Structures are given as structure tokens and as C-alpha cells.
View (cartoon, rainbow, N blue to C red):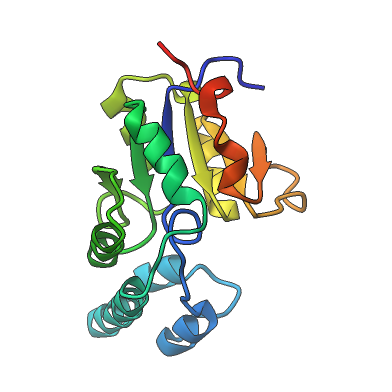
Length: 199
């Protein structure tokens, strides 16, 4: 249980702040990745340079196609605006490529400047990106919330010793991972006066 006040928020992007219609089954089929494996991990271990580059390009192309139609998740924009108006530090840590991430942020006018993609740090569930943000903010990890919609987000938060908030993802089957708060709609978070440190 975290008793320290909340001073900052880090968010996943796809499925957390904006919509995503990425078909991961189709994506894995396109690059030859087994369904049960993590696609980024699979691609990183392709020994043939040309095949690896082609696989990376295929994933990026699908991500960019998805980025062009991404919209705010209902309720997320208002929550972000509330934090922004109160000068609460915010960041985005995503497994997306930089190009698709920029499109989604720009098209939806997401007012978050601190962004780490898979090209900037090891991909989640590796906690490195979250730890980088904590260092940038000069904050204890326990003062920071990481909000995401998948097990990798929860695992990364746990490994970084941050609070893990799960948006619509039931992690009960993952007994070794801890969720500090579960919510189905961002409207549940609007009363942030009790959640965020005022100092």
C-alpha cells in the first residue's frame, strides 16, 4: 500500500488515452511471430538483418495507419485537462514507435510533452522508461501513478515501484502483480482533489 501523496502521472497511450484498432493477430501473422509471443521481443531476435528490418517496417506501417484514426478515450481528455490546469507533472510511456506516437498526440492535441517510445528506452514491462521519468521529475517512484490498460503496464509499474492504475483491464489472473486502483471510466477520477497532492 502506497501512503505517499500522488505528485505525478504517467500514462500508457493506446487503449488508455486514445483508441487503437491495431489487430495484433494480423500483425503477428504478417511478421511470422507466434501468437503467444511478444511481437517486439520476437522481432528483436530475428537474426537476418533484412528480415528484421522488413518486420519492423511492417509493424510501423500498421501503427501509423492506426494513429491516423485514433481518438480520445471517452473521459480521458477532461481528466488530462484537469491535471494540466493544476500543473501536475504528466508523461507518456508507450510501446508505440515515435512516428505513430507523434501523430496521435498531435492530432488529438494531447498536452503532454514528456514522451518515451520504444525507440527511446526498452519496451514495457521493462521499467527503465518509468524510472527515467521519475529521475527527470526528481520524485520518489511511490509518488507517481502509472496508468495503463494491459498487464505490461501493471508489471512495469510494479517493477518501477510506482502505483499501478488499471484502466479496464482485469489483472486478477496475474497473482504476482499488484493493482493499486482499478477503474472502468475516467469519470471515476474527476474528483482528483483527494488523489493528488496539492502542495
